[in-house]
Length: 170
Image (tube, rainbow, N blue to C red):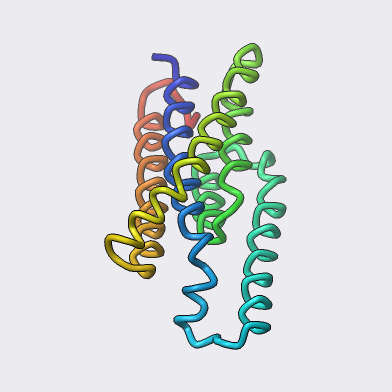
């Protein structure tokens, strides 16, 4: 199988895990903030707004990553973007745009958009199920584990590809 196809499958898997995890955490964020001790409605809205602002900023900051082309730079940005919940899609799209043949980029971006939409579709169902079966805290724990899993998949596949003769770090 061609390397860009392996990259695409890895990207899909990491993207769906990350977006699904992000999507099932978001609806429970106000409840989690309440559990941390913020009970006044105005302060609760303010903290949710501040967190949403930083999520958007993290996505905006991760957009110019097309300047990085090596495995470890992408890995560091993936971890940083995952920590701030957003920004994983721009990182994966940037990586795929630099490691996909030009005549295949339209298909790759279409599939990445489809996978992202599917992750947003599945996430409320998954998050609600986890919250009902376990607790709100388990929703956040599940997201953390999902990010670790996605990062592990990306690093494992990229490291194996980089070790192959003539494959490079693509």
